[in-house]
Amino acid sequence: MPRTPSRGDRGLAILSRMDAVNEWLLTWGDNFWTWVVLPVVVLLGLYFTIRSGVVQFRLIPEMFRTLTDKTPRKESGGPQSVSAFQAFTISAASRVGVGNIAGVGTAIAIGGPGAVFWMWLMAFVGGASAFIESSLAQLFKVRDEEGFHGGPAYYMQKGLGARWMGIVFAIILIICFPIAFSSLQANTIQATISGSFGADSAVWLPWLIGGTLSVLMALVIFGGVRRIASVTQTLVPMMALLYLLLGLVIVALNIERLPEVFAAIFTQAFGVNEVLGASLGYIILTGVKRGMFSNEAGLGSAPNAGATAAVTHPVKQGLVQTLGVYFDTFLVCSITAFIVLVSVPDLANAERGISLTQGAIVGSLGEWSNVLLSIIIFLLAFSSILGNYYYGEANIEFITPRRTAVLVYRIFAVIAVFLGAIVSADLVWNFADGAMGFMALVNLIAIALLSGIAIRLLKDYTLQRREGRDPVFTRDRLPDVRGITVWEDELTVTGPIDLITKRRQAQKHRDHLHETDAAARRQNE
Image 1 (tube, one colour):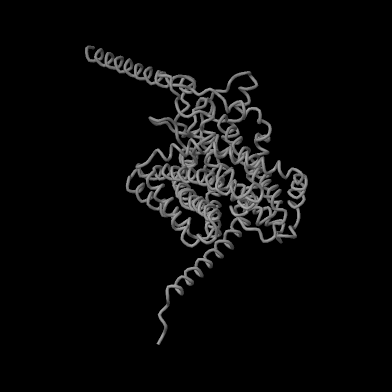
Image 2 (cartoon, rainbow, N blue to C red; image 1 turned 30 degrees about the horizontal axis):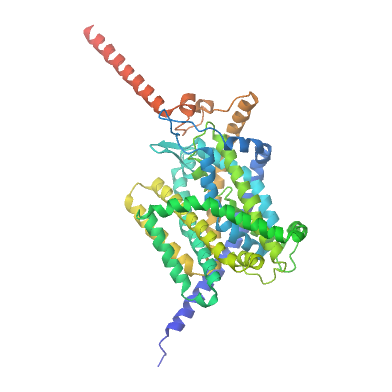
């Protein structure tokens, strides 16, 4: 008589299937990135760099100048929308998180110190892609009662006249950010807290953490406890700064190893890593994937934030978002790399992700830093979960105005966070990599097709700067480009929008009276 499978047997069968799925995702994802995504990312990044005249380097002074640019205001005194600096902080809050801490640890564990060099290089090349996508998002943004909004789905619909492409991108973004990336954030929170409590708690703690995160997220997105969101938005910049300070302290304590670390980053970037067995191609692939996950250059996420800014020229926000890529990679990611490399000289058999970074910090500062790192990770990752959710909701609303779609989306987003906390880290990372690759591919194709318009915007901006003017863009400067719904005239761009509305209403009223008088005269005749 056949034996009835026990709970243990069923559990082992489930784990075996998950391992098989993870292995398939890893193999498929590596092939997809190696032969499809990586060539497109690199070649288009280089193309944008050359065609823009290395805008990401040439206009670095302009990036800092436009960051503090004055925001066009309403007649009532308030801003038309968020400022350039606020849009920068919104996108920075989304960027600074798991990718900077766990992602860099994963890159080093897989590809060695050389992966850091390729992260740096791709941040520079990707800076041109970030400039193109955010400039286009500004150009094709739309206005509503609360201000401006837009993003890749909008420039695909309005710039390319391909709403279908915008819908495809929106669907992929929903899978990538609220589902895959939020799962990854939850997984990192769980791994950090479990590591702080010790291995004995690992059996039940992931379920408790996943349930708690799901409840907190549900309370926020269903409107119950919005104070949580406001608190995290306030604390996140402080936590990011605290993490940078922790990193600087660790580097200072191991300052004698810094020259050795720099040497390893540059020498192992162009050869085989003997310790990890990573080939040159795999080192490059790892650096590019982890770099894009962290700084999001060309991915199509930052333009959703960049489009909300009220600026006088689209190029200004393109420059600001390029600066955001540099801030993320050259500052925050580099701090994580230095923390790991000065603290863990032997990377053989090093754990991937947050465990490597966590071990390096605790090894340098002591067990007390475990608790502090858990708090930092929780606030950074949870705020990213909320940011990912709102990215997804905005794209749901682009697809359909039906509230039932938003409700279904909210349920799936909460479930994704719970599952992310209890499944294996490798499975979540590999799924996120695949989703990110598809999202980047669709966005890069769109901005490649629209890049000529972005280059014309750049030429218009530089021409006005040479004339000694603060550049102002109006849509009559690109009369052949369709789909531009704002940028009506200079008064609209720079002046109080309430006054503009009143003037237009008054003009319409005068026109109506004139037409009525003319009709009355014709009848009398």
